[in-house]
Image (cartoon, rainbow, N blue to C red):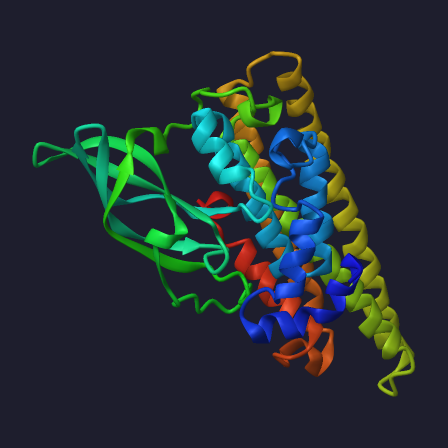
Length: 346
């Protein structure tokens, strides 16, 4: 199957509620969960900007697909923080992919050379095919819960997936809650972002994690918005000879052109700032707190602008806009859901 055919399968993907097996196979074949994984572990070892632009391209095909490629690749951020053997066990399999949550909604009881982990974590995108789950826990030591937070990696065999993802969009991302009960996690299978325990890291992995996550999610929003504008353009062309009058159609066409221009300016501004930060990082200079805060503000503003672009057009697109099975409605719902991520709203 050609990867571009995914665009034609958006409704099928949404109604199935997960990625079909042949599309998952396509991801493994093209190493799309390993964009920032070194070639020694079966990855593509892309530059940050190259990978972020792949996220956008995949999201232009379908929001669910792009979101899952982005989340799956996001797990690559943990590569340097695990010892060599654990890292190879998790990331070298052809279908190796991490899902999980950054919220510390579990407890890790310290016992000798490891932890007993119990808890539940929401919104673990890709939960139906993940081979490893990562989660954050508060450490409990000698019966007392501390403020220390530890990150754990657990094989999917020991994790229960609760089929509870019921959002209005991105319905096929399987962003379910996961649960573990008293699962033993050896010390070497815990980790802390920013530590280096193997040789597999790259400049991407040392880029500030918050900015990396924001850039990743914005690229998805940009891709879905691009898809929305493409679909809106098709609908406007189909209604070119609308009997309601050429004046009305002219106004809609002008509005579409205006929003397309807004989108290109938005896209250019975002990538220009990301490129500046990436080049500075590659040259060995640390990004200042002010630069990181500015990038965070740009990311949130970009997400809001993507929503505005879609909303400025949606009411002009007739009944397709409110029909759940139409492409434009599905894309609109996916955009709203993607832009609701905590990194883009808080």
